[in-house]
Image (cartoon, rainbow, N blue to C red; front, top):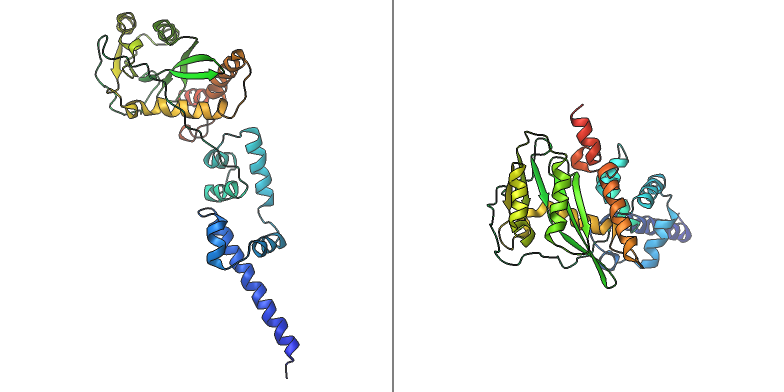
Length: 296
């Protein structure tokens, strides 16, 4: 006849195994829900949950170390770009581990700079119609201006982005968001244009893009001007998206004591973005790498 002591041990072992399985289930659901919701539903004490998590060998320890190394070098990489660096590893697994380790990319919203001052010149039609795809370089360019602030000083960043490979073709950085800023940027860009390019340059309806001198420069270089509808940022969504990523990666959360520190960071970021920063839609290549590989 089995003793009471043996029976108690078996029940205790079964209870331990049951709690361990429950802890595993809770752990798998942490990707979607916080522990504050999961533990009461599972009727599992917080201390019990962590006991069972720590008592099991971590099968993901090697992969976690690799993820941590990538995030340390590229803290702004989300799980998809981290996955692109880890060949053969499922992106959902990488996402789960990044969330477990608390290494998610934190975003910050900021008020958008607007250069719209009403209709003070010729408004161009919206030729792009939110179609940001391009089959070759110099087919569709986007431009806009964004504002950076360090203490009481501001800088205005005005780039041109090629829709083919998201490459920054040219850019200007100035104390004032004026016509000179956008025209000098455009002069940089047209130097790189092939003679027979059939190009659309899209912007919002900012006052700088309505200026006759700017529009004459476009016409001289046979560039078709396109403009977003009034107050519709989605008509230039790809450019807005770039500004958001740029500020998240090189501005938000950083501490600047002088404006020249910011200027250096922006100049360095443009080089890094064009030459090194991988993009999934570019097959894991940087913009310049993708352009060169596409025309070998």
